Length: 153
Image (cartoon, rainbow, N blue to C red; front, side, top):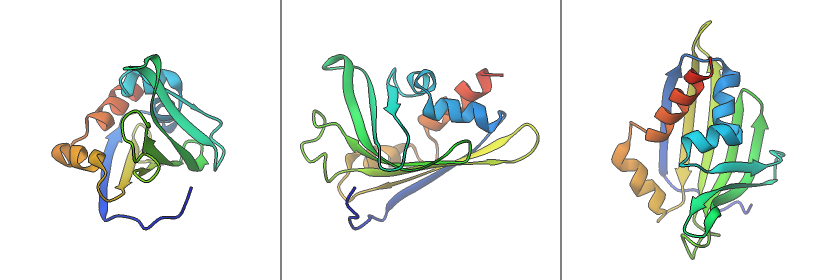
């Protein structure tokens, strides 16, 4: 986890979800949740700061294709989860220098609603930023998290 110069390529998504923080947390940090929200990919990590994180699932290399990997920056259950995310080597030959800092923050809005904020900061030249900009301020990923978390009631 080198501390490289950060890009100005930043987007912040903000959504209200009629679910408890625990339900949203499940969508973000449990394999069942990530399979439902990230094209069948499961999350693998110990979630300790500095630990490796991987998203694996169906893809060009079979059912266990590595899609993205990175390193956990912070992990405070039901409140904040941040990690550095790199494309897998199969997707980008510059995977070590191309990445996105992902930060999820949850705050209770009221008795039945939780606010989920996701900030993504991409390195210069990261094709993920160009893709995300085409949807912004909408996000199919955030919509998937909302649908999954609300289904857990």
